[in-house]
Length: 145
Image (cartoon, rainbow, N blue to C red; front, side, top):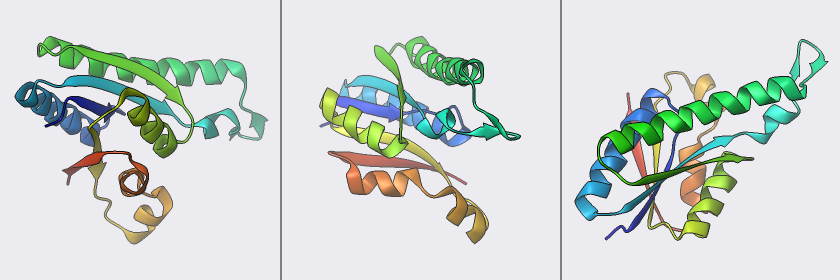
């Protein structure tokens, strides 16, 4: 069964549903839980109204991602799970797959929200779909409608 579960957590409704599902799975299979939040590296080169994205804004983004991660770790810990958390930076799919390999994960859990329009689906892409192609282990996609 699953001994190490990795949850890629973003604090969204889909992410929170995945968080609770991974907690249930971990309890059922007595697995280790590891949470990660991935701050996209594109934030380092974005521009805000023509100005370069400076270090202060980057630090604010980092604190926001860290807060989301801390909230997820706290929620699982409050449910009695031993859980670790780590903030990563880079392409979400690459970072999730790499971290899964590093910790020897048996299962990756991600949340996914169906988008209504084809334009929204095209524009946003799908981390969960791409992750299935790159993951070193099984992937559980928790759907929110």
